[in-house]
Every structure is written in C-alpha cells, then in structure tokens.
Image 1 (cartoon, protein in one colour):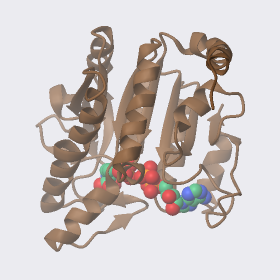
Image 2 (tube, protein in one colour):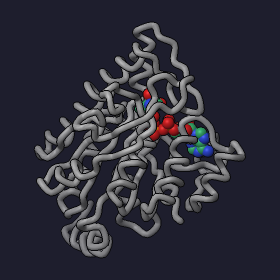
Image 3 (cartoon, protein in one colour):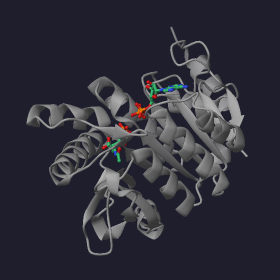
Image 4 (cartoon, protein in one colour):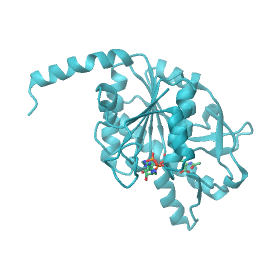
Length: 283
Ligand SMILES: Nc1ncnc2c1ncn2[C@@H]1O[C@H](COP(=O)(O)OP(=O)(O)O)[C@@H](O)[C@H]1O
Ligand SMILES: CC(=O)N[C@@H](CCC(=O)OP(=O)(O)O)C(=O)O
C-alpha cells in the first residue's frame, strides 16, 4: 500500500534526476519484440508521457522486426538476414512499409494519444527526414542513414509534440529503403545532439552469456562494445544494437543504454535511479 508520504518522498528523490534531464533530448528506441504485447505499449506510453510532462524532449523510434517476419510468413516470402539485417527485395519492402509505417507506428501513436494527444507519427521518408544510401547490394533495399533533418524533430518538440518515428528512409530520388531501427535511432540521436539514447529490447541488456539472463554486463566503453562484436560474443540482432551504441557514443551522445522493454517502467528506473536496470555504454 503506497501512502501519500511515500508518493511525496518518491517525488523528492526523483527531482535531481528530473532537473538533470529537463530540456534535454532523449531518443528512445523500442524494439518490435516488446511491442507485441499491447499492455507493454500502454505502459510505455505512460512512461514517455511522464518524461514529456517534465520537459524532456523525447523522440520515440520504433522497430517491428517480429511483426514484419509474421507478415512475410503469411505472404509466403522466406525471411533472410545477414548480420542481423533483413534482406529486402521489392515485395519485402512493401511489407516493411505496411507493417512499420501503417501498423506499428499507428499503434504507438494511438497508445500515447489515448492518454494525451501529443504524439505525431512520422516516417523517415516524410520530408526526407532520414536520407539513405544502399548498404550492400546483397541486402537489396536496405539503407544506411547519410543525413537526418533533425530540425524537423526539434520543431515538433518546440510545438509540444512527441515525434514517433518509423524507420523507412528514402534516397534522393525518393526510393524508399528499409533501415535497421537501432541504426536509425543512433543517427537521429547524433544529429539531435541527444543527451542519451535508450534501447528497449527483448533481453535484459547485453549478456555475457546470451542463454543466462543473470549474466548482465552493467557497463562498458564504446571500445569494449566494438571488441565484443569483433570477437563474435554477440549474435543476431544484438550486433547492430551494440554497434549503434558504440557509434552513438563516438558521435557525441552522452550515454547509450540497453534495457529490458518487457520490464514495467524500465525507462523510468534507468533514468531516475542510480542503479539503473540494464547495460550502459559510455565513452
Ligand atoms: N550477448 C547477448 N546479449 C543479449 N542478447 C543477445 C546477445 N547475443 C544475441 N542476443 C539476441 O539479440 C536479441 C536483441 O536483438 P533484437 O531482437 O534485434 O532486438 P529488439 O528486441 O530491439 O528488436 C536478444 O533478444 C537476444 O536474443
Ligand atoms: C534492415 C532491417 O533489418 N530492418 C529492420 C527494421 C525493423 C527493426 O529494426 O525492428 P526491430 O527493432 O524490432 O529489430 C527489419 O526489417 O526487421
């Protein structure tokens, strides 16, 4: 039972953290896995709105990998990934756009706007927010971000809105490209000179041993993150995520965090307590 005194004490304890982040930009990337549960989406919406209410300039970037896999299976298209990136032909690109822009983005925007109508959905193609070039011809329409129009996102913040970004970008001829959402969030965080980037993922953070959830790595440097990628101790989707963390730090972002998107109020615990709950990558 929480008493009014408990509430008052909690508010006072949170105040130094709130002061530290008010007016700062925070990029939150939510993976597709935590988003498969509507309760999680509602809980995330509440956390994001709380951050917004205390003056933190939040950009919410989302993935949707498992949801794309599901629709590809329905369409009878085989899923193929190289180093965690989806091989994306023209048919796959259509499905990626339908799922990320047409469904996942809409669901997240609705989850926030059901509480307070301040979320605005935007795809990387819109206003060429995320300009890309192809990564590698083996991957087809997979793009690497070359330019971010961060001013568009700053404008949304200035208007009191929370931009929710789906990571389909475009090249200079408006050809759409699929972008790994971890990498897109990294590019956005650097362009916006974000204080922090937080990855909400389907694991407790970086694990020493992926099969043991108790083997959490609490803190590591960008150089150590790169070394772990090189020695192949991380696999699958953790490769682009850890690389994105290292690049974010090298690009001037203060810290990069990987936390469990399935744990309730994970962002608030990571931001507003000293202990935190996931993995933090710093200089
Ligand atoms: N060393 C590791 N620590 C944690 N997760 C790992 C590791 N190596 C591989 N993984 C896998 O990477 C996944 C996270 O990547 P991904 O599924 O792309 O993220 P997201 O949940 O953000 O969509 C984890 O759920 C886990 O299965
Ligand atoms: C190029 C590439 O791999 N794009 C990703 C985009 C979605 C994503 O990154 O979703 P998660 O964050 O849920 O993994 C994909 O097609 O799955």
